[in-house]
Image (tube, rainbow, N blue to C red; front, side, top):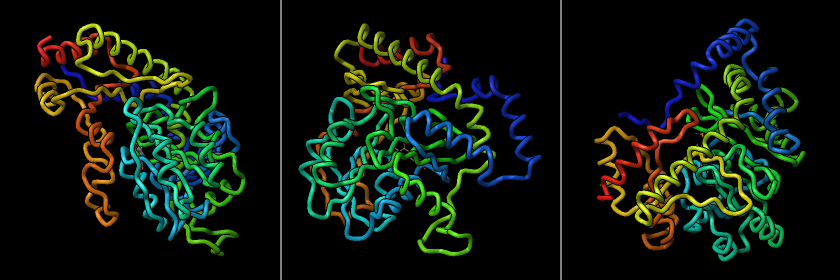
Length: 370
Ligand SMILES: *Cc1c(COP(=O)(O)O)cnc(C)c1O
């Protein structure tokens, strides 16, 4: 049996005629940039996130960068974020000229540890970027209290967590801005790059909307340095077809997660640490990530047996060569460094079959002699 990490083909077959129709409409309209499709998606996703504004941009990395710039974060400022994330989180901080301050994670959720955030605050700290890793929100209530106490802003990197909730609150409700990615593999994936900023803050909405069009306002007059970073109409049209299915796909992901957890706990007991959904959270399982010993050998074994897995992420940001100048060394953030050696993400997508999940678990059991 072959079990891919992600298979988008079945989803496409189900939506194919609708997708082709809307693509044809966009091409027939000759309106490719910032038209009605983008506007509709911005409104729908803002509403879905229970906030006032959505601003479509070129990708999820630009979304973080543009949100930071709109909030006035720049040279001389420190931004606290998790070391256990995709590169883009840290890259965006450096791209606005600020300094990333990486902190350690909660070993259960892999998300930023609020205690470590508070310890890292200095008089230069201006912002916190929690990342809702694998589809579960970081502890936003605690982070919001810390931010308020120290007069900081929060930008949520929600690239992996569209649809996630915490105590009834959506991504974007407890921060100055939250950012989504529509990279094809994300829970709401385009057929190319795309991203969005969602915010309740009118000023952030206004500024991010200007920055994405070269800082042009009125047209051809530039008061701020902007970029060309827009969600395009073809991608927005595809996303408008997919968006109505997002909640149902989230539910399916949660069912697959439950199946994995049940099978793994039953066959492997404490050889495998299964994901934890913290109380009050609605985890959307962008990834189903276990912790194991001998992870690299297990991955190789599974690969030989036709099971594709991924390591998110093998090297925390504080140890990345590009950030060497920040002066971190091995051992500085031990919880994340341990996670980087133990985390393994298993195949996860709404169309995954129970037989495939059973096969994955049987092969893991075989590897550990269970
Ligand atoms: C995917 C991702 C991004 C970047 O999104 P792109 O659309 O690929 O630029 C940022 N942060 C995290 C945590 C991600 O998973």
